[in-house]
Length: 463
Image 1 (tube, helix red, strand yellow):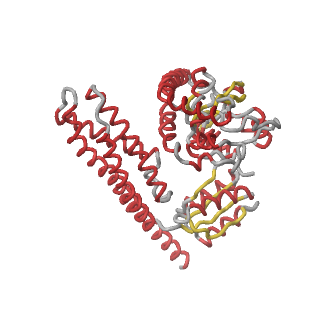
Image 2: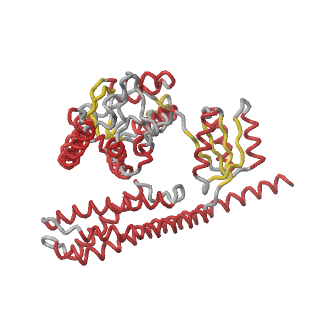
Image 3: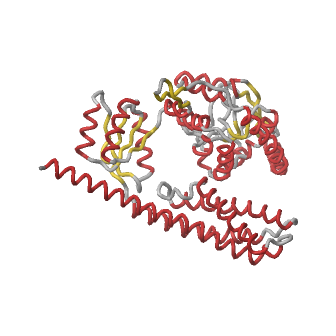
């Protein structure tokens, strides 16, 4: 009889969770749509009053409707790319920042469209006023979205399951940085007898699990159990997960088989990517030339040393090349001949260097490397040969980064930091390598705009 009651309670709980998830999903959709509709309504008011009458050979109402739709679509896509709709995972300040960047970037694209339609350089002031008003709206909307999200999804009681100390620290970092989403119920080590872990989960019934560092066999056992019990599971992936993600699926002897091998990149994709690299690099040089001139003068005036700094790096197939940057450190920064990353409070960095590193201006000369074909706009960051050797001693998979051409920006640069651990950067780079496409490259380029003014993304490593 107790078993029947238990099963009945479990089924009722699952039905409640399912209904709650559907209701929350509807509310979240309404919140997202409200952001798009409010900004679009403000854009329509601005367009009708300032731009609609200036369009060359007006398209009448239907043409204006098309412009409104384009604005809404661009804003929706950029909001997703910049993480505006991740208000359940981010602090209000982060959502505001993402919202403002998405508004400004959308405004830039719409200004270009207005330019094309008018065939004259239009007045930029209406777009700037619209962006300012929407930025104010972003503050109110972001705070409201966070409050509603936290009420609908209070912090879950989560059990951290790990099998090594590094994995434990990673899990605790995630939980501690998201206190509105997770509340640590317990942390346990996955021992050799995985049934003990299953029994604990069954008896304690946490609201969520976080698995860090577990091997595939115990992890799959836990996943199957949690799927049956409808318990959400958050997983810190291993390198092998990304390799499996890059494997091909096929049928052999009427059975599903996955094959992983180092295949050559698609020739069409390589050619198209190279074309984009050349066109965007030339455009970048033209746009950035005033900034480059001012930076060169500032570096020269400060200490009279060389403006540029070159260093040997590795690109596709471990080919060595010189990467160029604006010099941000003292001339004798590595007089001892030892290769090391910049650290927190590094006294080798000059005052000019601190500014150009924080704003990524020091990276601009790498456009030359892209034009030469040594680098691409998107790809894993080029690493120094000696640091590659050090990393490959502890992570043999680190060599997989050189399957593709090195890049100016990439997944690790957008979603990580300068001081992100090499293992975590490797995971992000392999995520990119497994999902290469022009669309993915374009998303990363757009997402790079968001991090340009985030100083924490250029923090040095700890000593």
